[in-house]
Length: 241
Image 1 (cartoon, rainbow, N blue to C red):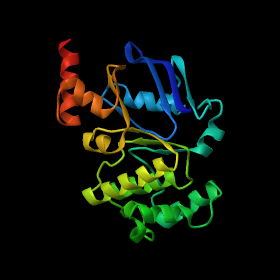
Image 2 (cartoon, rainbow, N blue to C red):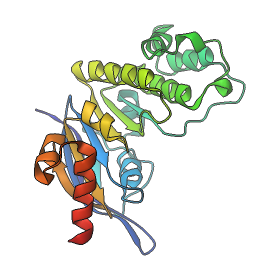
Image 3 (cartoon, one colour):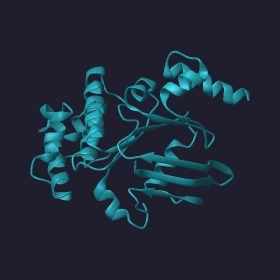
Image 4 (cartoon, rainbow, N blue to C red):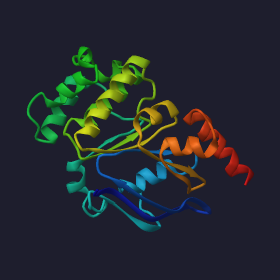
């Protein structure tokens, strides 16, 4: 199986604070991968370095074989990104955002609106983005990440603010996208979400990977019935070690 995302010896410090200390990951094509860890563990720094938004002190990253800094334009034609706090012009409508996305990626007119409908937001297409709820804005940001059918997708706190019905709709759509061959890299604090979506996970603590494997393997290793219990038990073991 081909590797979609490659991270090698990734390290980053902010002054005397070491955010990452030698991260190594290889994520194959067609997998949903979850990066987990408490606040301050290095998840955001990993994502920013991986996407070329922040320069690492050491190591290298490749997505679809591309350097995220030197080959940024080519990469982002083939990748989709959804951030936790997206921003849009204050007076823009949802339909206008979708139209801009179609033109930016040279999509068929209406392709982004069709993705919006798949995520259950078609009734808000004529609304101002500023009038959307937090969960609706998350779905609009996800629509932009998915509409051009990218091969690699990066999701930061995917379903923050979504109600249970919307959350399930998003999960179902992402599983369909994965089944079509896309690779999905997500960060999340929702263990229910991770267990529903991810084939493999990495647990970060103080800039180091302290577990790498399947959710089932983490549960078996800690002797816990749920992923949330296993996650908390593993972190407790790390603190006491």
